Every structure is written in structure tokens, then in C-alpha cells.
Image (cartoon, rainbow over all chains, first blue to last red):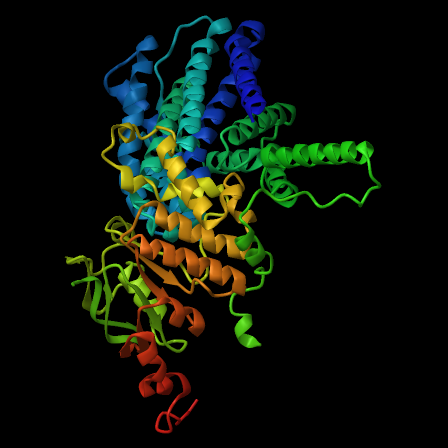
Length: 364
Length: 257
């Protein structure tokens, strides 16, 4: 257990070190641009996972917060004529707006569960996209342009890279803290059986809403950063259904409800998608491949890469231990079955024969 | 002595089916009270109404003098009523210890360390208390296992254990002996008696008559949503109304189905 924890911290520290020096080693503008996109998705997927992964409520409406963050930054920068690096000071404002949208959104959507919840989040998403197309404050289909930054092209991406890295790393740290906290425990209890959790004193609505708002805040921050990075926002890209699908797919691929799972998923998928878009000038090819990948993941890795790998390692270790025991003495098969963990005699006798469905006794 | 839990004239209909029709049940402090009746007589519905899982149409529920009619489940639990379910419900993707810690939160609010919402779930005192309960029920060896890997009988024990974590004044058990073998039934019965001797109050729904008659001091019999008889086990055993409820009388025997 302890060596595992040490390994985990080692991997996290190594990843942080690599991320910190990445743009100093790979100075190509194309590479750093993909790196910024990837970090935005790492942060978005980790944030989405704090809500959807832990609570089991699959949201396909988180692009609402991303888009709201982008438009908030755009409108504020335009109206207040913010320019230069000062534009990054608008990021907290985007986070606040995302949170203010998340509260009523959550209070309505979180009354329903499972498929109904998914449908409601999609519906709310399209309402926001339609508003972005049709309201005057958003510039309609022309969108909003960000202030021009007269930075040197070679290092233009670096401030964005480090800001995205800080947000992503902070979100991962928050995700880890939440998962081991009582708040996270309550979320995971809600995922397993919400009504039972309420019967044990969990204030389900409050807990779900808190997680929803937390993930919305990060989405808002990232939306604003993304807006300044690509220097404009259009309704169909600010409120992009593909963002929701990508984020969900990344989390599913890596391992839903885990801290590292969504990060692994985003690190694999986003650079892959960017590479495909560059390889094939037709961007729909990458979307078709993305969709096919979704199907493959559900077919072969329904629980994601991380749980799958852990199971493989555990069974490999188990087999190795078995082989060692067999070599140590006794013909194979003569060994008793591995002893179960210590248990009081009475319940063990009781439970060993109690696998039948309740009520079977009554039919005899 | 006043009743710890009192359901007074409770009515509940599902569409045209009157599941409870003016049902009144009292549970004395420190007692083990049984609730029996044929299938469909409203026992589980009464549990659901008391614990806030169903809204009642008429009547009132009091715990220790406080009116909790139609209070949501989390409030009912916070006021000291714990329950188990007929079809055992645990959190399968959490470990057994994590299952225990879910119920902890409300009992220790107000202590300083819980002000921080990101503090690690379950302090050492909470974990020790949870471990004692798991040990008491005989599943301490499984504390680190995922609850989904437990057998049906072990899940029953876990469900009872995590309800006890929050130290509820009264525990409602829905068929604690249902679907488990005789030696485990005895084990569960012994644990309930021990807890009762330490002052815990129980209300038990159960079909296993030997179990109910052996453990309860007082039994209420439910039929068609009302209490048709109540009293000590010996009186209930011989009550003609109870035999009617279970076996049907000549007048009742007009099946049109």
C-alpha cells in the first residue's frame, strides 16, 4: 500500500516536472499550441469528472459554462476595453458568471436522474447556444473578437500554456482532495444509491449542487482562457456539443470517477485528435474516428483504461504469487483455496449458504 | 412511559389501492417491537412513510414528541431513526469502511475539524468506532474490501452496521432474517438482543414467525393497512383476528380475481 502511494506521488511529480519544462524543450509553435489545447481539455475533463464521475450524473451540458466563460471574457474585454496581459484578470469574472449560471441550472436539472438528467443538460445547452446566436450582447453569429496581443510569435503560446497548466493542475489537486474527503464520499454514495444515501443523512441536493458548481467554475475559467487564446468566440464553437462529447469520452476512456483516469484520457485523445485534424484537411475525419473510438471503448474497455490496467496488474501479481507457491512445494491443486480474510465463525457459516435470492425459502 | 416512535392514523393510497388506512403503531422506548402481517398488508409502506421515502396522505408521525410527518429521509435520519431495507441496499463501489463512514457525517457536526469540507473522510475516532461495529457484527475482516464483493448475508450485516454508526435512537429493520440461513438468523437475533440490552429500540418487520416471536416483546399485526391486533407474542399467537388475517375467514373468502 505504501509503495503504491509512493509510486503515485512519484508519477505525479514526474508529470508535473515534464509539464513545467515542456514549452522550453519543444519550442515549435504548433507543438505548444496543441499542448495548450490539451491542457485545456485535461482541466475540463478533470472538472467534469468531479461532478459527473463522482456523482454518476452524466452531464452533456458543461459546454454551457465553457461558452459562458468565453463570452463573459469577450463582452467584458470589449466593453471595458481591456488590453494586453490585463485581460487575464477577467478570468475570475468568467468563473463567477459560470457559477451563477450553474446554481439555477443545477437546481432544475438535478431533480431528475440518469437518462432524463442527460437529456435536460443537452436541452439547456442548446438554449444557451441559441441565445448566443440571437442575443445582441453576444454579437450573434459574428461572435466577439478578443483584444490583440502584440507578443512575439515564438513565445506567444507560453503564457497560455502556463495558465492552462496552473488551472489543470489545480483542478486535479482539487479532484484528489474531494475524492478522499467526506464530500467526495457523499458524492460517490449518491452515485451508488442516492436514496439509500439520503436515508443515512446525506443532503443529496446540496452535495450534488456543490459539485456541479465547482466543475462549472473551472469550465468558466477555461472558456475564458480559450477565448483569449484563439482570439475570438463564435456561438457554435463557444457552445460546442463536441466539447461535451469529447470531455465525456476522455473521462470514460481513462476511467470515470478516478482522479487520474480523465487526465490520461485527455492526454491521449486531444493530441490524437489534433494530429488527425492536421493529417486530414477534412476535419470530419477526426470526428468520425472519435465516434468510432467511443464505440470501441464501450465495447472493450467499458470501465476505462485505468481500472482495466489495475485489474490486469492485480491478476498478473496473483498468478506470479501462485506460481511461486506452486514452486515452493506440493503438487498443483493440493493447496487449499486462499483463506478469506479473518471473520467471526458464526456469520461466515451463515453467509456461505446465503447466496440465494431472498424469499427462495418460502417457495419450498 | 411515553412512546419513542408513534405513527398516528396514517393513510397512504397508491392510485386506487389503499395501502395504509388509518394505521396507528407505537414503539416504546427500549423495546423490540414486531410488525407482522400478510404480504401486501402495508408493513413496508409504513416504514417508507415513517422514514420519508413516501409522502403520507393523512395522519402524523412523531419521534420522541417531535412531529416528523413527511420529513425528508435525511432529516428523519438526523432525528435518530435508522432503517434497513427489505432488499438490502449498500454502496457496492465503496469499500466496507467507506460504507460505514457515509453515515458518520451528521453525528459529529460541530466538532472543529469538520469545518473544513475537504478534510479527509472519517477521522481516527470515526474509523475506530466503525471498526468496533464491524467487529461486533463479525465482518471486520472485510473492512478494506469493496462492498459489492460481499455475500448477501454479509451485506445484511453491513447494512445494519452502518445504520448503527450514527447511533440512532430507534432502528427499523425490514426483514432482517429474510433470505439468510438459520445460523445467520441466530447471529443477527443475538446482535439485536445485545444492542437492545444496551438501550437501543427496534421496530422489526419480519415473516419468520419463530424469529419474531422469539425476539419481540410486543407485536402489532397489520392487515389491509390497519392494525388488527397488538400485544405480547403469546396473546398474538392465539388471537383469532390474527389467524383470520393470515389464513382468511369464510366471509373473506369471496375471491373475484
